Length: 140
Image 1 (spheres, helix red, strand yellow):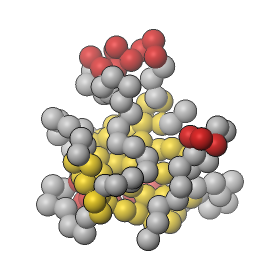
Image 2 (spheres, helix red, strand yellow):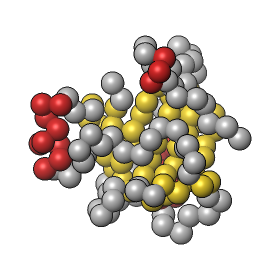
Image 3 (cartoon, rainbow, N blue to C red):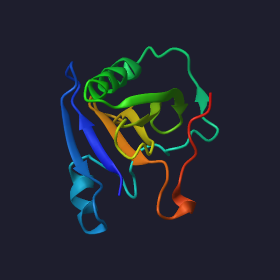
Image 4 (spheres, rainbow, N blue to C red):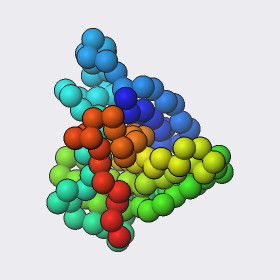
């Protein structure tokens, strides 16, 4: 189950973590503005999204600050990619590992919640028990 983290627009980012909501609680999460119908944010893989080299929206600066806070706790950035998603706008994705742990990489996805000032971060392992749900590492 992915872990979704909601970030306030404050700097440094304040983090509130919640596990993905079970189907029975989706209505509550939707009412709180956390998720839309069957919505856990942008897809974990880029697909056909256009990669960006600049970001005037501030998403990258906020998500980089989140990544740096995680790095202070020992998480290692492997690769990051910023892209433009038709529904979510600027999306920041990074593959990270936890040295000394299992070493299994995971995807950190960060974006501004559409229509709100807050940010959302989704942590997801790259390799899932069901291989059809696994996602490839970010390419160069």
